[in-house]
Length: 286
Image (tube, rainbow, N blue to C red; front, side):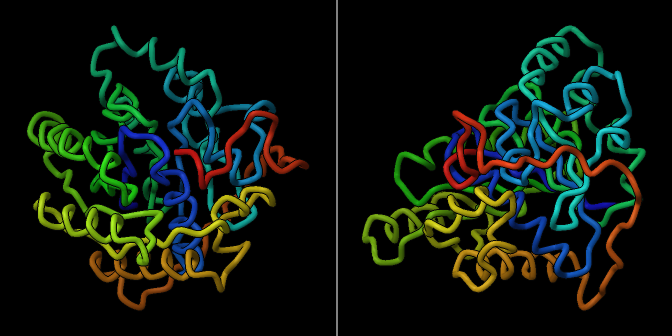
């Protein structure tokens, strides 16, 4: 069964979307079958992987509403990952869940039909602690928490970790924190080094190797790919490959190589422009 990882932080702009896309691409390079699920109504992950949310047939909104199975909403990205895209309709779909029984388990039930087809499932959570994020935590085996190396950025991490503890106790006893992932890290900055040190002292969870600040993260979505494909020799791409290898060792995947998933289904509508008007590059959103 696929290992499900929720990438969550209620603060925006901490590179959740960049982390999901980059780790997904890194896992594909390591031979794993990967599914990404965009749970953010802003659709930053969908945009950044070259897919126009305005023209997809089905999305996470349709899955959450129970109108289509998750398997019918998958698209193939140019880097070999499968994606369940998001649209702005997810806002209304989340509101519709509020009175529903067992509302925290909608995503878990939807994922059950496809888990055996993947080695890793990455959930890109919205920047909130709302019902969609609770669904992600209830469905996940682990949570990875990206945080920007700035003092104000990690003030809400304690609240998120408290929420994870509550979900572990009440909804999902298998859920664990895989670690905090410092992003946009500038080792030349005294402030960034101080924040990283404070994070390591303050929270009793693992802190993974930091991801360096790089303009390449913002440039990659202009060609509809992750930094792994756009700038494979960059410091950012190498950093995410190291994180992927760290996770694989922790999961004891070892040197195992799994043939990429070759299931045939729609490749979706690829964008012919960089980012739609008003859209944000993945390096700046999520």
